[in-house]
Length: 72
Image (cartoon, rainbow, N blue to C red; front, side, top):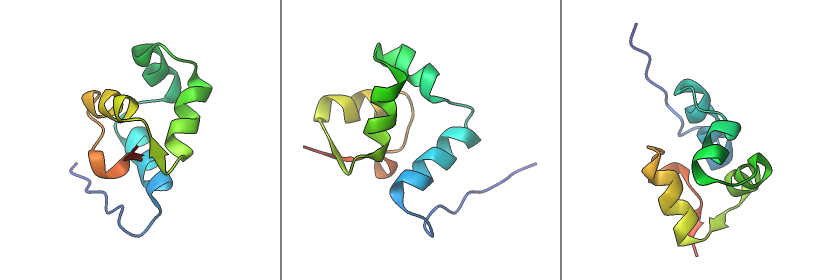
């Protein structure tokens, strides 16, 4: 089954959370890979801006840049 996600109709945070679920990634898994608390990942997802370092770390996990906060 091939399912295409059109995330253009929702805000960035909701699109990112949907993308994570679709790809089987959760905040605890991401937190472990970044070596931070899951609450830190949650705050990163909610923010409109984040440090370049964090944005690059999230992107290195395969998350599309257009779903990530704008780098500071």
